Image 1 (cartoon, helix red, strand yellow):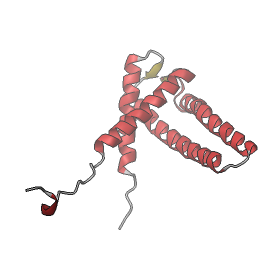
Image 2: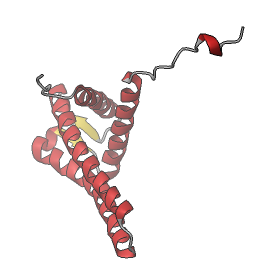
Image 3: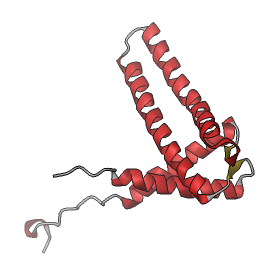
Image 4: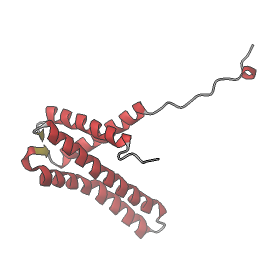
Length: 145
């Protein structure tokens, strides 16, 4: 059986990112996307960058958990901090490099809030679309009567 080209959850994430990005552009003056096409391309860029950030964050957290000495724990904390802070600058510079003045996500704090909103919206939509757990029906022996 052939693997799908894209994971459906990734496509949904991009759609969620487009919605959040366009809402931010509508209500926050620091966030600018000149066209819908640019917001879609920006959402795809954000998806790629945020997936890399999550991967690096998870690796840094694993290193922190598996470290036993003070130096290892300190290095793990510093790596985690560098990923979390540095990722905002990577997003800002990537957008500036690819889209110049046609897309602006504001400064460090604006992009931090935007990323937080993107991740919360993604989590919310994934939870909304997930299948509910199947609850077993009570057996006849277990019911009073």
